[in-house]
Image 1 (cartoon, rainbow, N blue to C red):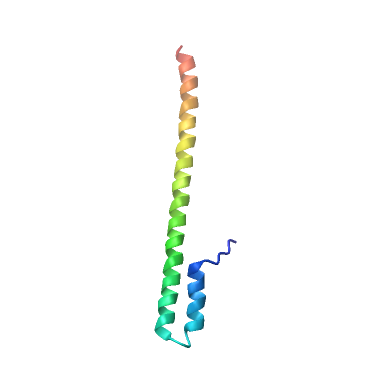
Image 2: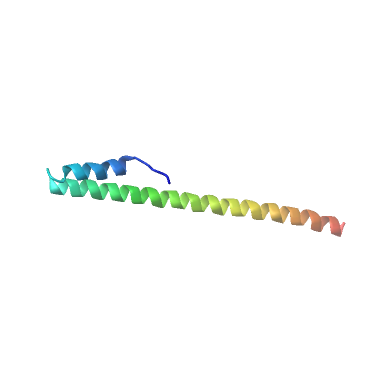
Length: 76
């Protein structure tokens, strides 16, 4: 489990403490914190997917290279 304490989490905690003082300010801070973490999650997921796709392409290109080497030796 990866525990993070970044700005989105601080905003959510801040909204909890500000709730009794100013309702709308706490709602804005909570919303900003949730949206910030959601955007971070989307970016991290996209980066992981892109890395997985790149690894798949690398493996496919190596497999194609090895296949071409053995195919070329048979034709010579």
